Image (cartoon, rainbow, N blue to C red; front, side, top):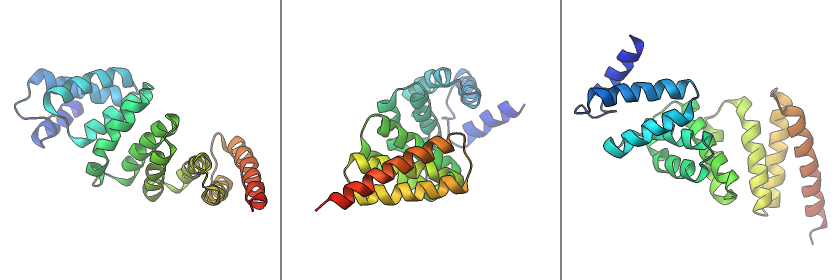
Length: 193
């Protein structure tokens, strides 16, 4: 019943064209189930098909970007998410944080550090405080890779402060690595004429 209500709501709010066939509405419901169940490949197949027929709304297109990310199609993920980022401003902050993180991580993996920086920074403005450590940690890397040593130092210091404040699964390893990187950066800045 809940699934039917979601599908009907989506159809009547313009998320799926009213003229869409019942079979396509059912497919959209199945795609949502797959997404919620972390079956990203199945969701991706359905959403990409529906997007080619109807041009999905920004949320579903963002879901598609997340699916691409989980399928290791990082270039597709970054492109897909970049096209809808401005259209997600009305979404809840936590949802926007997920899309920003996913886009930034895709770009980071592709070694497009300069492009990743604004997405990590935008994520910092909307994420929960306990998520800031990982974004600052990645920003520290991006700053190092782009030879912005002062920014790298500042971001890694902030990441360490957040890691010390909030617990996470990989906290100790990240703290150790960030501390070593910070020591190297400080030495580099000290040796710089």
